[in-house]
Length: 30
Length: 442
Image (cartoon, rainbow over all chains, first blue to last red; front, side, top):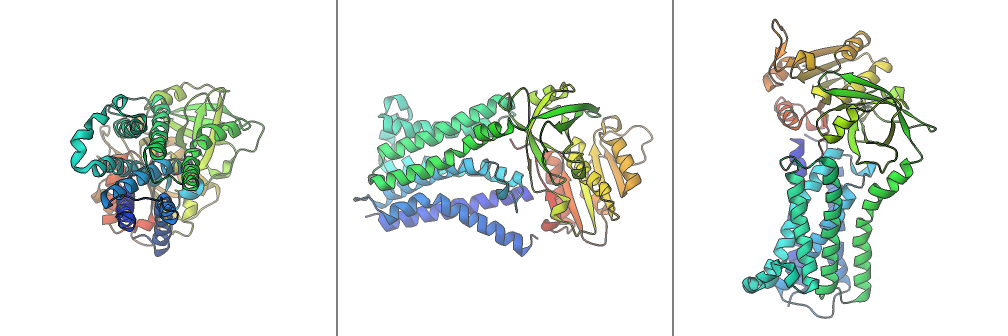
């Protein structure tokens, strides 16, 4: 139960970072 | 459910972590390189930088900073560390796939790094090291890798993964062409990596001035031994009942790998303390043969599981498996030393009556505390009238106190903890009243 919290936290972090990478590419890409 | 305060703190930590991981991208946006690529190329670069960020920040999660553990518990910080490996690996693998796109087949020869230009080879080696890190950590037990060689390999592979990535980014990439950006990014990344020095060099150096001595080695039932330790020429440390310390046995703190063990003695008895160790691996077997007078080194205390984190409960419920009861024993002994008058319950699951550790100290504690002890035996002796089998939801439903607010502590082998935690939540115990830490960290 508690261990699943760490999995959710990592999944949320991964999703947020991937979206941030997409925004970065949109801002910089030609 | 967790309290609003816990959730806020957890969200703040997660936000801070994500922001730190994004630092390279923010830096690259603030001082952009003079020329850019297409969307896919920029996305590939961003994921490459994020993979290096995540790898570098892995050193932060295991740098033993006490302030990282709450509100999650040290075991969840390590669990997060393990999950992040897959994120870093995923981003690192997406990087070449997006970069080469339809020409990926033509780039497959880079998979043999010695055939690739060295700036590409560094990135390939970095990815290979990351794959090896994941395989050796997740399958350590199945591969029968002993803890100590694994730990050395883990440190070495982690360095290859990060430094290979750093080399690749500075030499093969175009985004770090501005010297100020390159140097800031290098300092930021290598700063995290230097935290490994904190754990593997600076901490052991500091420990050298604080030796401990084994004053008693007491065999316990169930293949366990209790080492009684006293500080030599210093005041030791104060700890909260339920916490753990990293133990090294040998002539110096560098003599062998450290292992985490919970303290089983009362926090009121500090600086003298006891660690109960079950023989499960190479180190624990050696620890069992430790004699009186042996030199020991302790880095601690760590961990956030403690009765002191939940002082105003109406009582405590401890659910332990085998020698995992050590932290519960520490908490019960502390309560007894403080003259606690509340009602407490310990459910102790073991395989056999003759292999049940702490039977005598628990009997003595029942004289000093309002404590009910329920033994659950997997293979009970003939004529056993008590509980048998495993700690199931039905058993918990029968035994748990019905009134008041109780702190619940779960300590034991992983599968047992999974089952008990799920059962407790199903029985309506709020997550904020549930305290557990796992010490089989790898």
